[in-house]
Image (tube, rainbow, N blue to C red; front, side, top):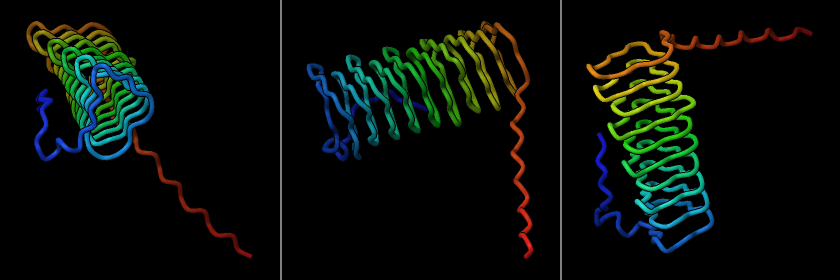
Length: 198
């Protein structure tokens, strides 16, 4: 599903903004193309793709299509695909289509399709919500899986668990309260008001 490949192709290399390890930049980044951060950025980033390198730090929000975090993000993230590598950490809010977590996350996670917590992943979430969730690492908090929660043989889930279906492999641990997921009822559409007659 994800590959932590930080190399770029020749077709996109000319569209990369690179922040070197010795640089600290303050201000927002906006535009098309990619940003690779090995230094520190204090500000919001809104581009096509972002790579935070192992020494990189972002203090601000990221809005992008694809994001790889191998450093630190102190802020929210909104993207389609997110990979948090084993050295990566994210605090605050994550809203994505799908995410692979091999590092650390503290905050709120909302994924439309899929959350995968790898063996090295450690998540402490106020709420983590997705259609399908696979936990091979450690999770603490409130978890909501509208289709399937799968706990791998090295996985640990502790907290309030709301699921439609659950699959636990031998060795996987579940601790906490559990309830059945029910889809929210659609809001009724209001009937049109009759026109006033004169």
